[in-house]
Length: 182
Image (tube, rainbow, N blue to C red; front, side, top):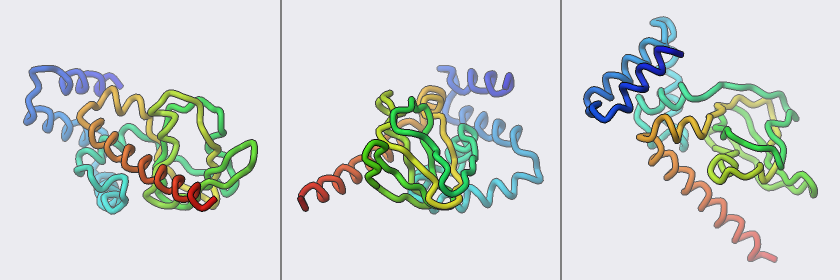
């Protein structure tokens, strides 16, 4: 953790040029990943680049995203978070499917699959979770600390916020189409 803080201080310093910042990112990633794990990590990053959430990020940026995430698994039927909870994390689905539903009515809102993101609203607006997320199948996720990403890695913020804005806009349009049916 101390190494991370030192590198991060250097990375965010005003004197750190783009070249130096790139070198610091490479050093950080190679310090964290052992040689035997590097090929596994490279394969993972290459496969993630095909998912919509990761597709606009460079290999180095995906590495930083993964550095700020925790890989978690849930069994079918497990609750990932509950409507009304305070949320600081958002999730990207690696494997499996997640159901999003309203708690009080039990109304099904969406089923999401690999490459899709959920839980971002609570991170963006600092409000309680607006719905419950449950594993529809056994699921493997990346749990991202949204505030850490936005605060510690501002260079990723623009791409991250642009992606999340597109996703929220897409979902709003879908909700509008559903309302038009009634």
